[in-house]
Image (tube, rainbow over all chains, first blue to last red; front, side):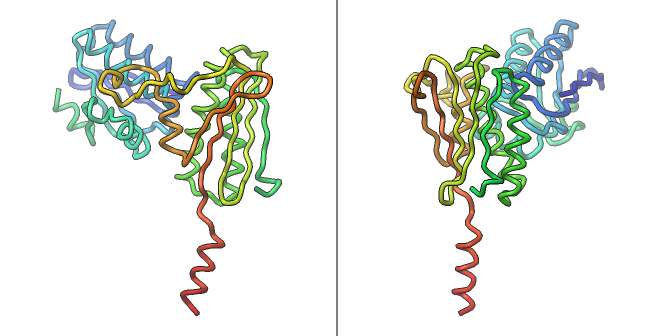
Length: 111
Length: 153
């Protein structure tokens, strides 16, 4: 998995590419979110558009990222969910927890 | 399952070996004619079974093996994942959809397997450990073809 971090209009955008799975990507995601929050980010947007596989550990890391950000007074939202990622978040009922957007423009405007 | 679709792998208890299982499984399912969408969900379920065997079963002891075996039984794809751990009590599982568990970072692996396969069950492994059996009903091209012939007749 690759994580690239960029800034756009006061929002820290984390572009994720590849698999978020146990032993391969789950820790990278956690560390990237932790780092952004430690650096003072208050608005975080995770772009999942290029995620190919999300296992239960990857889902767990998304949840941890959300609770970490929220507990530090930051907002964390998701954008560009591929259909398989959307399916997983739907069956785990986490789609109701996360603030999810179809496009980056909509997501950025929502903060 | 014809011999070239059947496989048996023994891997050391390291998470990176899950990728090896995925490659072999994907190749086998592709030969069976399973489409990419269906292969993805079987892959996810098997990943969870192997990850649990490595983490909770074998406690990531690389000296302990995880056995992965796949075969076709009638129209069912049957995949068995065995660990050498201390055993497992499925009755102790929590419901990951319960409101109090929704924001927990773990506890969704077996829920994943149940969601993406038609059947899963756990058995003690002879000599110690756990065997999880995952079953997926395959579409039957023969049955479809018979139906089409009947319709034409």
